[in-house]
Every structure is written in structure tokens, then in C-alpha cells.
Length: 92
Image (tube, rainbow, N blue to C red):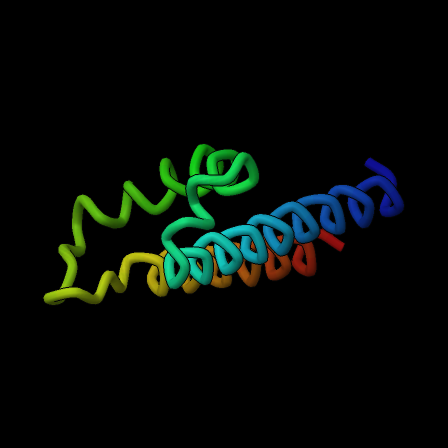
């Protein structure tokens, strides 16, 4: 496989992970204004973010009123991004 294709593939995967991380952060910040989640944009973000965050909520229950699953989810995305970069660095 050509190095250019691998670089494009890496950049594409890294971009998708970064965009998804930003969408998660926006969704988390929207929780501070509950009415914002009722908007069309909020509903779209909910469909994108909740399946991923729900996975972590199965294992990490809220601590009182604080849900730390989004922190763990973003941390996991960061680890995945770093892992993808490390794998592509080994290949290239």
C-alpha cells in the first residue's frame, strides 16, 4: 500500500475521532442548559453521543449528581487516537 494512502487513512481516522470528541464536549456542555437538549440540534447530538456514553454508563454509575462517564469516554477516545497514531507510525 502506498504511504500516501496510509497517511490519508490516518488523517481521516484522526479527524473523525477529533470531530466526535468535539461533538461529545458540546453535548456535555449542553447538559448545563437542559432546554438546549430539546432543540433539533440537541436531539441530533443525543443520537450521536448517547450510544457511546451509554456504554460507559453501564460500568460507571453516577457519583451522586455527577456523571463521570463522559470524562472516561473522552479519555478513551484520546487513547484510541493515540493508539491509531502509534500503529500508523509503526507501519510508516
